[in-house]
Image (cartoon, rainbow, N blue to C red; front, side, top):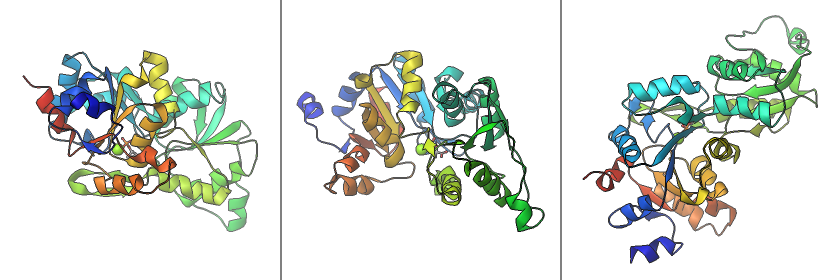
Length: 313
Ligand SMILES: C[C@H](OP(=O)(O)O)C(=O)O
Ligand SMILES: [Mg+2]
């Protein structure tokens, strides 16, 4: 019965009962989003470390695929291990690392320089692939409007890269705009997430808010690297040779995590510990829009802890 259920094409199905082991047996690799799925802020979702560690004990490959650009792979591995997750640095694909890889491998910018609106972590990942950067840290307004329009631009800068920057400022927005008035200056963003889910159901504005500010000023659209862009999965597949048809993408956002899974032919599981709800998914499902069906998950759970019954015993 459940075998036919798997093949039935019905979407947005609660993953429980006999279907749960069936789905887990049908995949060799699980890609987990981080914020809102395995943790919120610095608090692990209850049961999440056990789920990840038991999946690995059962021989599943586990990767962490996050749009968050605030940490290097090493910083994420340290955070994962501190929260009880059995995780290695090369299993982490965050947008600090992936945007550096994108600029190197897709844009051919190795040896070049970027104007960075972003974190120290992004600057470290860029420099690790041979790309210099300028712009990290505070940058306060000074002088008059005429001075702002005449800010000195570094002639070696070939791209503007925008990620999460807790020092985001009007002057940074202005500098990015001045660089982007040069049509040959590339424009890359880490991701478009509008909110960052935190502990106790709190949230703060996400990187997407900063990226949209720069896009509005420059009247240009950035190429984004993060989910739902195929590139995030390509980074995993190119390094580990995974079979998309035997992968499960687990996320809390329909327009990033679930859409990435749909874009790449992965099975998809929505967890309700982050941004979106089942009702949000059902609105897309009933929309009649073919494109929006990509945001409808195959399955959903309240929390990834709901996978434990199929992993214990
Ligand atoms: C929220 C998002 O992180 P993710 O959910 O992809 O880990 C982000 O930090 O913009
Ligand atoms: Mg998330």
